[in-house]
Image (cartoon, rainbow, N blue to C red):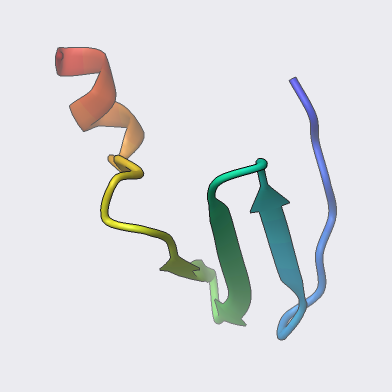
Length: 53
């Protein structure tokens, strides 16, 4: 597992040879918001949904 710290407004990029995922972080009060840009072929689920599968 990789753990990273990011400040609000910072970005994380995950890239393979064929796909690129960009995650933009924003903190509002006690909530963290993520804007995720990824190709449609990349499946993105909340943790509780992924565990139910």
